[in-house]
Length: 262
Ligand SMILES: Nc1ncnc2c1ncn2[C@@H]1O[C@H](COP(=O)(O)OP(=O)(O)O)[C@@H](O)[C@H]1O
Ligand SMILES: [Mg+2]
Image 1 (cartoon, protein in one colour):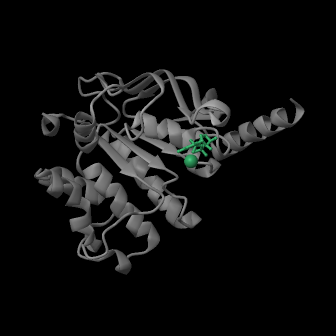
Image 2: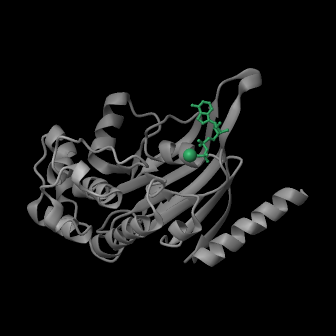
């Protein structure tokens, strides 16, 4: 079923719901009693399909927790999370693992490539493990999009940091997930390599119709997104559409100023 899903270009919904992920009144608390920390405090959010969403906010504001809960990597204390029309809160482990494998892609700060495999082998590894055949046409398109055509036989240690992260982006895209989550995916890259990777993420949204949610603290990285969500103390306190690096930076200064006076 998953492989038959058509992803239309330019952010079309391909007949699926326009919301790729949805959180309703999500609370995530760690610990109990005196050491209880509320990382997410009744969060409501819709992640539009075919859009690039950035999540920003100070350290400890709940960005990673929100991403992990939306991706089914972590359980919630209360509230509901849907991926497309599947409620993932309450799914049993086995179903959840299956759903993550088939429908969700991840890009982490560390590239997490296997050193003994070529770039191409790394890209297809998750599908090989799942016993799924990559769609050749799609794979070619993904490789083209991330600009790795002449690097496919290289091992990770023969590639620059930026190229390695592009392999990780291609790996996430190759299985045609409904949504890709990235936690500071350019956090370990210099600004030029970071710009390259962000450019490819942007292209995957514009040209392949991918849905992406990216945690970042970098206004320049956020400017590649269609929408920026701001978290503070586990709540979504603001959002911005069509951000620029300057407008994001200004908004962050506003928050800092408010934080100092209140
Ligand atoms: N496994 C955990 N156990 C206890 N507290 C945690 C855990 N993970 C996160 N927290 C707390 O939850 C809050 C939000 O953390 P996190 O989502 O990592 O923030 P961010 O990604 O915005 O820096 C912080 O106060 C953090 O200390
Ligand atoms: Mg974090």
